[in-house]
Image 1 (tube, one colour):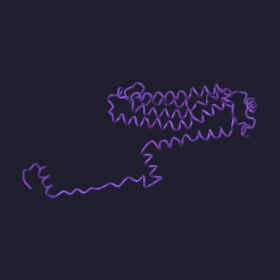
Image 2 (cartoon, rainbow, N blue to C red; image 1 turned 45 degrees about the vertical axis):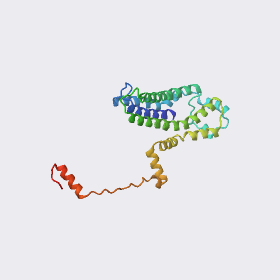
Image 3 (tube, rainbow, N blue to C red; image 1 turned 90 degrees about the vertical axis):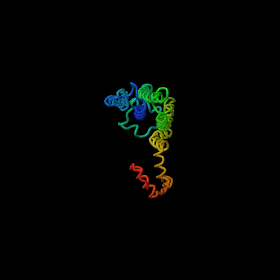
Image 4 (cartoon, rainbow, N blue to C red; image 1 turned 120 degrees about the horizontal axis):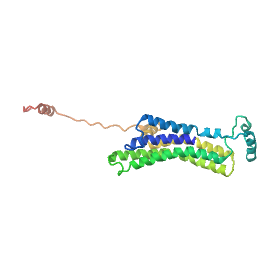
Length: 243
């Protein structure tokens, strides 16, 4: 899940990078190059768990019995044949996650920092101040949009890793952390509504229709006399005739 979310964030920043950065060798000029790049990125993100399956331990039954010493009261599903222990070595598990998630994070950091570098006036002198201000506003909105759901994911994930390292198991805390992890989609949607004004205005209009309505336009009446209209027509026609 973490690697998939990181790849989606990378695609978001790569799209913004392509809109901001114009003259650079790191911009994909051809569609075929982008297709190849995204093919390798999504192949890596989808096959992250496949590396663990390839190196799964052979003695699954013995390993399951050994785990009963640490978790003496597992749920009934633990004893079913479809339960598979991917890894008994936490270091190897952490190494795979770090490699896959670290690769996506490095790409996100590169595209983000490269965008910030090209938004500086000294590096893009041809960009107008208005365009630079709008690009900065959109880029900051992207950062906030990504930061809110990532905080929802990182906090319980860190607690889970600490509990694994300390060999502390609590089913109640595990269920709570898992529930918090599933809220990242809702947090991302709420962030989009709060950050971007069109979404915010539309949502407020749905909740409170009176606040979402545009203010009534004031109409002004302009009276034009016939003499002035005739004078304009005669002047436009180039005639010297007096009305």
